[in-house]
Image (cartoon, rainbow, N blue to C red; front, side, top):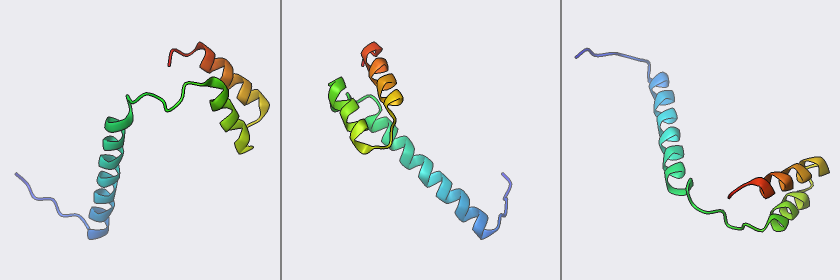
Length: 71
């Protein structure tokens, strides 16, 4: 086994990246296959529309996609 020496700030960067990865992995394992909180297409599209961040074309595309989805 060989010993590798790296600067302290590089070690801290690697450690922070590892901790973020582990956190994200844990979230995905816990919630990835959970059912959606609602399956009501109108409620979903209304919530998107009420934010004011999405245009009508996107909302219509979302609605169309949700109708095709087997969620």
